[in-house]
View 1: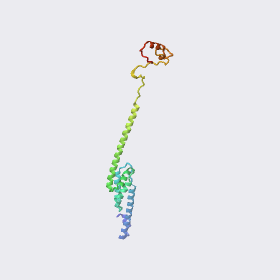
View 2: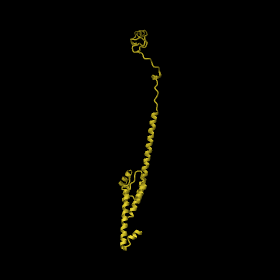
View 3: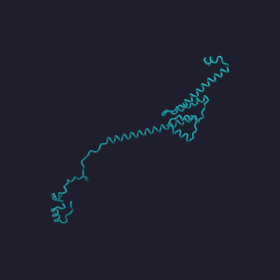
View 4: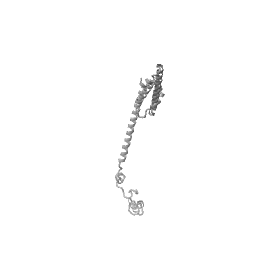
Length: 203
C-alpha cells in the first residue's frame, strides 16, 4: 500500500478501510471499462491499411475488456470487428451475413486475411492489364504518327500503254480537217465505197 493510502486509512477501522479500498478500485475498474469500450468502438480500419494487424488489435481490446467483467459473445465480437471495416470489405460482410456464417474471432481473422489477399491479387492483375492496354494504344499512336504517305506520282494509264493525245471533237480523225467527224467525212466515205469488204466501223 502506498504512503498516501496508509495516511488516508490511519484512523479507519478494518471494515471501513476495506470498504474504502473497494470503492476506490471499483471506480478505477469502471474508468478502465469505459476507456477500453471507447477504444473498441472508435477503432476503424483505414482503406489500404493491413486488415490482419487491425483485427488482432481489436481482438486484444475485446479480450482486455473481458477481464473487467464485460464479456461479449462471439457473434457480438465478430459484429463489432465487421463494423470497423471500410467499404472495400462490403462484399465480404454481405456474403458473411447472407450465408449466416458463424465464426470465432481467430477464424474471422483468417477469413479476412484470405479475402484481402484475393482482392489485392485481383487489383494487381487489373492494373497490369490496364497498363498493357495503355502501352499498346501508345504504340499504335506512335506507328500512325510515324507513317508517311506515298509520294504522288504521275498517273499511268491502265494496261501500261501510252496515253493517246486528246483530239478535239470537231476534228476528223481521217482527214484531220476541222468541222466534221470521221463518219461524216466525204473522203472517208469515198474511199470506203471504193474498197468493198473493208471494215465500215467508225471511230
